Length: 368
Image (cartoon, rainbow, N blue to C red):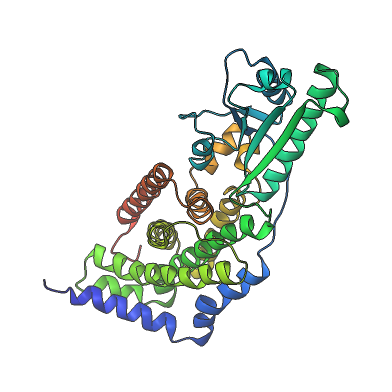
């Protein structure tokens, strides 16, 4: 197969131009490690719209009553599930919490004097898990005291809580994947957004467009190096997450790398479009900031998407960072749910394809 020398020339030029500056090398490979160490902290907010599920039993009025009281509390909403397996519901991210009664049902077990119910909680979001536990404790206290007319210290129900995916309730396990996704997004969009605008500002863009080059050669030559540089940061950032913050890596490393490649291609497409639409590096930096700030806020890293009003949720789900963050948490903490991974891959690939198509249409081999 014949290698395109023009494309190789562009790629070689971008690598040399980017990596010859010691400050740029520090920005690419040292800054992510420092930022991962400094910013692996959590920001909390009120928790609501918790997706609650339960495994129903025939004539189990007490369990049904507990579930309905939880829904009416305003903290919980019914979970839409596709399986009766409580672990499967949480693993597939269909429910945040699941009530599990004994095989004979909670009502019959109370009548026999050994009432017990288990609450499974998805603790990949540690702050959300703590709030769910507090909410359910309050609901069970009300059911026991008001509905069953029992005192709390002689409760007929033993309430057992099982924390999944983060049993020690460590904040870093929840927060570090969010910082990882944010750093990758910052690096790729910021660098790529200045690639073509830098040529315009320095006057070398005239040489590019006057040379016998094709549109796709210029765009790919300007973007492929940043895809490589962005992906090369993933092992560094992941190493800090696993070995410094002790975040578990339960899923496939190869799947995580593939997720990162797809996400980086999408963010580089965003940076490329910004670079094509702007004329100076200052404009590119400002446009990048205008995208990055709301993208980070609406990704679910600090503020749960479930808490947002419907129109903000719509915007949040147009955000590639939302899908990559959920992929990271699902792969690292849960081991990776195949259906979720494939659906998020499809969304990110579609976003990248749309963005790069728009970039090709907006790009003009002229100085105008």
